[in-house]
Amino acid sequence: MAKQLPPGQFETEKWPILHEGDVYQFDEQTWEFRLFGDVKKEISLSYSQVMELPKTVSTIDMHCVTTWSKFDTTFEGIAFREFLRFVELDPDVKYVKIYGYLNGDRFGYSANLPLEALMGDDALFVYRWKDKHHDWQDISPKHGYPLRFIPPASFYLWKGAKWASGIRFMKKDEPGYWEQRGYSMTANPFKEERFADPADAFKLW
Image (cartoon, rainbow, N blue to C red; front, side, top):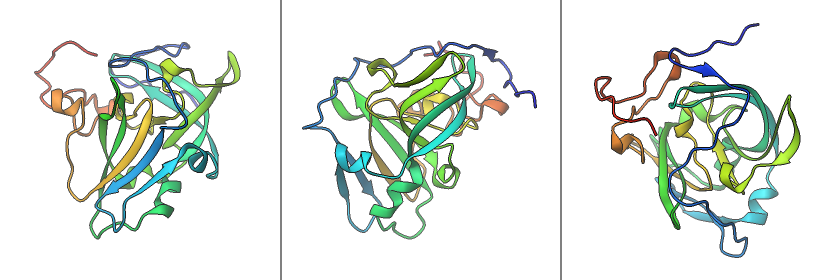
């Protein structure tokens, strides 16, 4: 079956590198993954605890708001849903923020997403990848090592997070890093939801 290219996108076989700020330098001794927000009890997991979680392998299409799309990249990682075993959510939690490092700030980057959309095999915190041109390899620091959140293909790629550092559970939706700068809260590439105001055509990141 032919892949569907969202409007305004072009297909590439490369995996372009775009990010805000400095490349995070991983230190296992200080790294931790925080689960917090509207939960009964907040928790932090070490790198070894995260890497002991069940693994999922999934092939995911990526659509970047800068207009490139890459089909059929296979990732290995930890499914978003695996982290739910550690927290008891408050009633009516329907949204999350995925956080990542930005210029040394553990929570400097964030992206908001609906919880319901993240329960499948295509919502992964990934650490290695392959495609038809590459065998299995760890993601590089510039791609988000040691852990990068890749969202389902029904969202533009900025809804992921390089150098992932935690999940905040929320009852109400709240804009993340790029949403605060005028990007769409929902970010559906097939509806070309790039900006909160379609007329607000400032420079793509």
